[in-house]
Amino acid sequence: MSLLSRLGRTAAAGTAAVVLATLLTPAQASALVLDCDTFRHHNDDHVGIAFCTNETNRTMKFRAVVVCGWAPDVNGNWVTLRPGASGQSQGRCSVFSTGVGAIGVDERYA
Image (cartoon, rainbow, N blue to C red):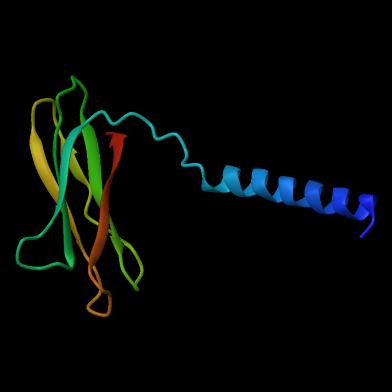
């Protein structure tokens, strides 16, 4: 194998490593304004719940974002919270899924 061929392979491998590292690096998450706890329902592993408290001085809305195994992900209903209020949103994975894999929170200013 010639030196030029080895250099080409090395450059290609280096470029692939940089692209792969860029794709695998998690995106910077925005700071959450609400104080939230997420959990899977105690008796039904297909239900994901987000319980949030609004400790700000602005009205906020949020919903649970439920990652379901082997099925499409689901979102819970939007819940509007006045300052100081608490509430919960939940989503149910399809019966064909393997259950809740992760739960996140989507929040917005109301």
